[in-house]
Length: 121
Image (cartoon, rainbow, N blue to C red):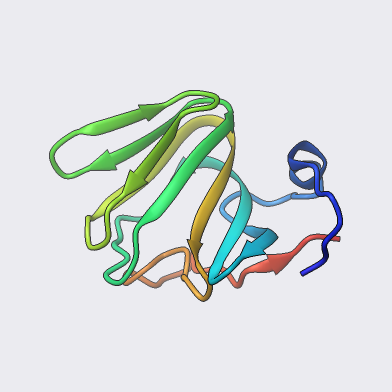
């Protein structure tokens, strides 16, 4: 990864499709990803890793089997490893994700929303 300064808002402006994470940078064995979200994702787990969500703009609901977690701008929530969850955004959300390198966005669920990690411009 480059040692250049990266701007989150500029990076998000490059993203066209929803649910398509792009690597902003990497820290040790983790990727810092930016993503635009809208609609409902797929129920899934990440059996081997936690997943951190930070909302930049909009309102994101992380559906868990026992409750919903509502995230507003600048809110952070960690989904513990192995916990089934389903992100949902009624309007477009811009977010940052922190995940171990190689983490697949759909976790153990797979399916048509599985996306290769993309690199920014």
